[in-house]
Length: 237
Image (tube, rainbow, N blue to C red):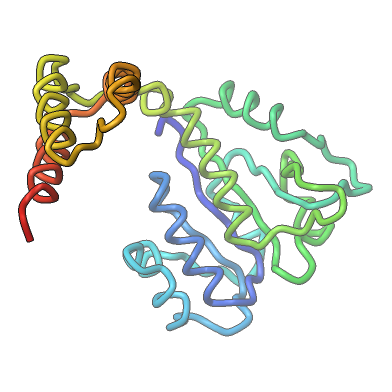
């Protein structure tokens, strides 16, 4: 990532949320986690257990006594709040937040989130450059702490990794000739089972089988599996 991002959790209450946040950070290529005055102390075993494969982020987590100390090495701070605050700060919707990031290349950016029960206080918000609201349903705007971090980190990851999101996943398709071989086997076995007992309908049934299998896009392995199933089912018990 061109920017140097850090996630700041102000007074987090649950070790599980800290651990889940660390995991989210690692999922999307971030590695800096700062916390201020965690309610249950630090180090926290629940945080480490929940982080699963991101224990290295937990081990490197920096702990501060207050918000002012936690933000001092960042150049730009974005704070996230579930509601608009009556403070003298620039409030951004999520789209404008992402557009703003595009203009802040090579900056040290802090992403600040508040405690689970109350969110960021006006005092915490006073240290930020911008306040961002994550869009959610009007009837229930409160988001779990680690979920909020996940949404933000995922969207930033998208900004810096467009090739991944435009990547086409293609499989090697089986040749039509191989589908024909499978269908000949299938029709042979069905004939032996007197499946086409109504001779007047046999032609239309074969056409329907052709329509079914020729419109599929199986690869060679899938065709071999289908052929093996037909052969196995046709064996005498």
